[in-house]
Length: 350
Ligand code: KG4
Ligand code: ZN
Image (cartoon, rainbow, N blue to C red; front, side, top):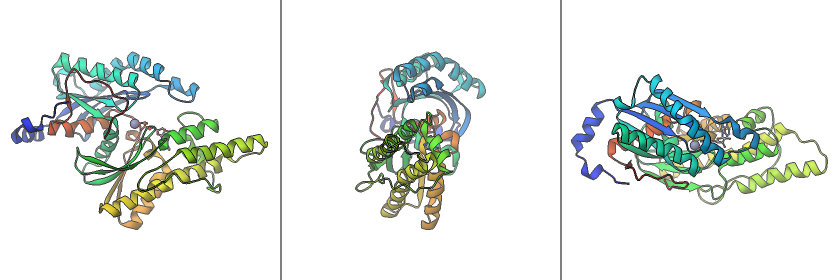
């Protein structure tokens, strides 16, 4: 992907900064078909999200069905986003798309669609990393927030602690070596027959329970995490009880799992802020919607004099507005400007 910054004059960048930039953003990495129009990275003129409910009956996302659903919906979703923003393909400045990480077939729908728009309307195409999009969701909610800061990204596919040095430079400090936090929430909820997605349901049941069951914490060396041991411990606990015909207290299981999953995230995030000398911590990704995470992080940050930021709930889980926010800073710096050879990637580095 060409990086245009070296070829671009400082004057061009200043010109871009001096005018409002409207970006149409498209997100289709998993089971949300989403489109948004975002003004200058911070103001959401429209954000339309279609969540595919068809996967509920399977207890998880079925990739092939997700791709087909995106294909059916994407045109209407983009139309609606443009209409709500009072824009057309011909009076916006760029089109941005999530090109990874995610489900390959699902990503390809958004990528192909965006390439067609870019070609037909002669618009620059900005390729956005989904995880960086999650981080940028914070810029929408907190209009004055600027890097540097530490960010904890916790989603269905990723768990990582990062140093966000500038709007476009990130460094990974640690990550999950196996399952992502959200994946563990979903798997535990499935075994408890709570439904899908499991995170919000565990969050709800945990409010009525107490963390009285001792499950292993999800932390390992340094700033890394591991969720497979915790997940297996909870599954064993449930299976043991069912074999012995013992009644389990679902609320307590949820509260105990949640505390083992979340406490360590907060501890390591605070430790990273202190060790690397940062006064700001951001949360991002679907699991940052978790009320216990928000509360615990808020308590621990105020004890340590760290400013805490998290996105408004609607921008925690997958949406296209966050992709438009991230794209804006790439557009300004001429980074990740793609051409028609852009391909989707199931796995990408930050
Ligand atoms: O960021 P996201 O929408 O998709 C990915 O990029 O993966 O995250 C989805 C994940 C799911 O695993 C879902 O269960 C979890 O976020 N999630 C939550 C909550 N809301 C969504 N996990 C815990 N508590 C919540 N309130
Ligand atoms: Zn996501």
